[in-house]
Length: 322
Length: 131
Image (cartoon, rainbow over all chains, first blue to last red; front, side, top):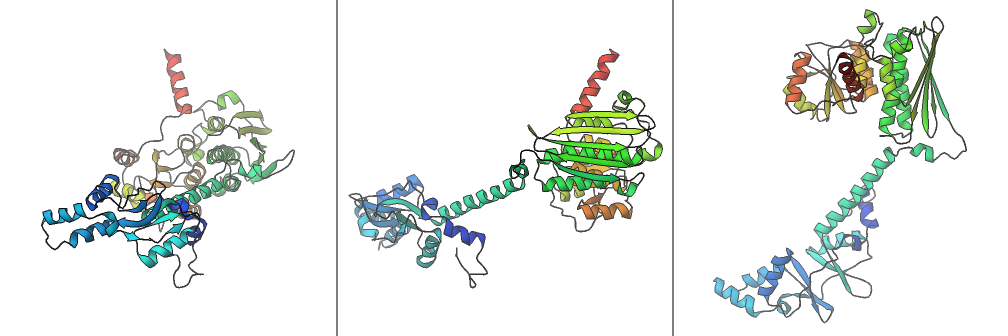
């Protein structure tokens, strides 16, 4: 673990920055297991096993006087001249933590940046450092593992923040300060321009996604707009799509001067269609257009006069989305 | 399920270039009716269709379809491929029928888009009146 590489400026990553933002206290473990110096090495071994730790500060009369680790334990066992288990046990039973600990251990302050801790691990290659406050009290212990965990937690938090920034429902509107406000988008749809049929709704969808609306809202607006656009292309001899965006609702209107709808109630029946074969061959005209628009919107009104044209108005509310 | 697994299951091929085979889809829909695709899918769906015109790609874009598989050995016209490239929607090809392509993928564990109010309401009503 290194805080900087050969070229510190070039390699100053987000991670490096984090190591300067995070304090040692945020990466340390506060529940420190300490041992008294009078403990035998045998008892110390049991402490390590019971707590699944690999080292502990040695505390006497409330004051940290040293640190002892599993490596000291191994050295103690290895130093026995006779390698029989009886000889090892004898040494473990008769020698104390005080004899094998490292006195006056290197420490870190709780308010130091994490980068200092990482440097110290690099330089001294120790497994752990006791953490003290400016008054000298033992407040925690830090290991490479706890550093990695703290960094991962911060990266996760930063990542979540970015996600929220991408999808804050209505975030766009919160930045607008006005008593009244509406944004109107208008698209012209050409009759029987099949190659570009749907392009207006495609542009609308893209625009709405820039406004940071809820993805489900965007999908509903896009689908109703697309179905309405197809109706303009197939039936309406072209026309306009007008979308009005307000903080609480999105209104979508289409106006055409096409043949109009004779029987609106019949046209609203799912499956009812008067589409000719060429419309069906494009995957439309199955009688789902208007029912689909209705299913995607909260309100829908159609006014149509045969021979004059059709006016469709739909509303999607932005509250209670999802 | 990722596209790589799907391609293996249907012994399929990619049509558009540089397809991200690790792209994850969470459900599937098989239809030649674009309005049905709009009405009966959710974001993150893979679409199986025998229809190859550019409207399939537009429909996919509007409905948030992640990838399209053309079935029955159909190969889309260049207009469709160009639009898919522009919209960033991967196109795949299957030699099997719509039924078998869907069936293989469904059997391998990809769920359908589920039931929709628009479908069930109409369905229940129909049987009520005939009783």
